Amino acid sequence: REVLAFAKEELLTSMDVEEERKNKFRGKLYILSEDSAWQEAGIGHASVIGTGTNRRLQFKDEESGKILHDRPVFASDVYQLQGEGERKTIIVWEDQEDQKDWALSFQDDEGSQAIYSQICHEPGRVLPAPKLTNLQDLARRIALVNPSQREQVAGELAEPEFLAELRETFHSAEDLNSQKDLSTIFQIVKRIFLMSTHSLTERYLAEDVYEDVLGMLENDDTLPPEKRIPHREVMKEKVKFNDVLS
Image (cartoon, rainbow, N blue to C red; front, side, top):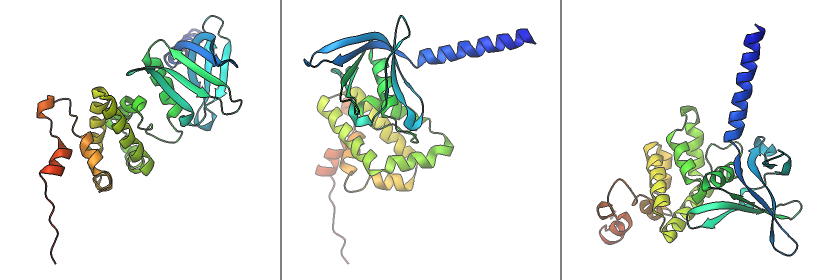
């Protein structure tokens, strides 16, 4: 029994270590000096620990394991994802309590995307905000929504703030000509309609948003560009609306 108990404890410990490893990402921590120059504050691993309103952004030294940074997670708009082109590997922010400027530079965008997504995901919500940096995660969550969460997800998708940010992200993707992001937005909107919720369908085809939504549905990457339907152009040039006579 003692051997079995020891083996079980060892297994659980190794699982905890593996889970912790998966949730930490290697990078460099920087702080902005009084001379407005970025100074390296350490090389190590970043992670978001805690739950709900008690979440904290933590950075541990790679060699010693010493905690070099441990601060609360502030509102999502405090953090900015930066980089070159579509490769966003840097997170910058100003600490809202001590007004110091910090930056995390990751080896690859997997780390920056994961940490940024954890920062921006509000406690109590199923879906992350529809930002460019969260689109893959958002598409995955909508595709794999649990039946017990279906009603909550539909409610979040219909929120004015969510729809406004989705439209803004769509405009940004078009401005950047980011085919990868436009394709992911297509998948997101397609899955929203496939949820077959009357209130959602009605909201996404409402007069104030339908033109943008039709634009989002123009980017089906399973079709060659010449076979994709330019829905907005069709609506403007080929569809005529007639007044109903009483």
